[in-house]
Length: 120
Image (cartoon, rainbow, N blue to C red; front, side):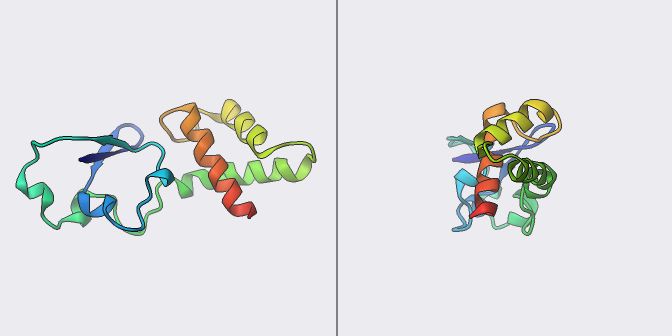
């Protein structure tokens, strides 16, 4: 199985050591794609995770999402009747081109999860 991490302007393969880690939860990376294959070279399975996978210590979109999450939280504080979903969808509709991600749904899902995690 291959896991392709969706990035701007393209994607990259995640080394199996990365996606087999207990810390890797596919729901935290809604833009990852999973592919099945049997034709990989033997070198792919050697322990070179630092070269082939996502570098350790990087949180994916967390840093890129932070300014947008801050705006969403401000909007929620200013308006009593605004829901998290409403605030996130409004922001993605207005600033979708600036937010990294493969699709509108992926951006909304990821930002909603980040806002919920911060508010709980």
